[in-house]
Amino acid sequence: MSSIGISIILPTLNEEENLKKIIPEIIYKFQENNLSYEIVVVDDNSSDNTELTMNKFISENPNIKFVKRKNDPSLPLSIYEGIENSKFEYVMWLDADGSMPVDDMLKLVMTQKDNINDVIIGSRFVKDGGYKGVKDLSKNKLFQAIRSVKDSNDSVLGMIFSIMFNRVLNFLMRVNVKDLTSGFVIGKKEYFSFDIFKDAEYGEYFIFLVKHMITKKIKMVEVGYICETRIHGDSKTASNILQLFRRGIPYLKVAFKLRKNDGN
Image (tube, rainbow, N blue to C red; front, side, top):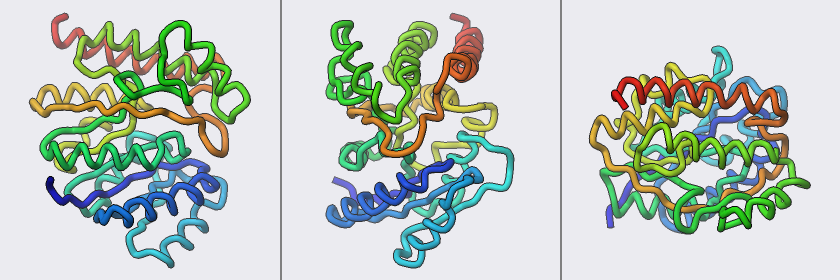
């Protein structure tokens, strides 16, 4: 098993309260497992006290960086700026809302250590994966999943968006990756070029990423994880029907464009 260093990138927008919880968990778990790490928080001009919170963390731990973006808000470019500001050979990024548990971060890291040249993807739609505490997303479990998010800070629409759009995207793309809206990844820093992120509006950058890895003949391994409800704050994916459609259109455009380019 190889020894690797990991730069953990957390793109943020008003996630102050979540950062207070997940950063100490990451530090504890990664130190407990003797892993070399740094945490790079890239903030998209939050209106809360994210910067003050991060300054406190930085004063206590040299393995933490804070990058405050100056350009127009962009999740894809926030991730890329985190990659640019990372120091280790391997980079991992994930949502900063607590929906991707630290234990699953470790599971991805351990898989990476056994597959040093692959890209490891956290997936809700393979074995051991699930959504909002529901492992089986077959028809008879979908309403159970909906009930589990109804009283949380997550959007039921956001959950349905992920499930339904992955089915549509898999039909359109015909690639061997089940979770095409993942956003939970680890791989060699050199794999993730600016071209993957530059034309994306939001999470559809992940489709570009998958196609890029296929083009470069880089193997992708999906590792199942249970996506939990966010700890604090509101979902940025789809809090209403209009936002749901706005978020979904870029995914479909990219999928159709890439399928057309492939001649399918």
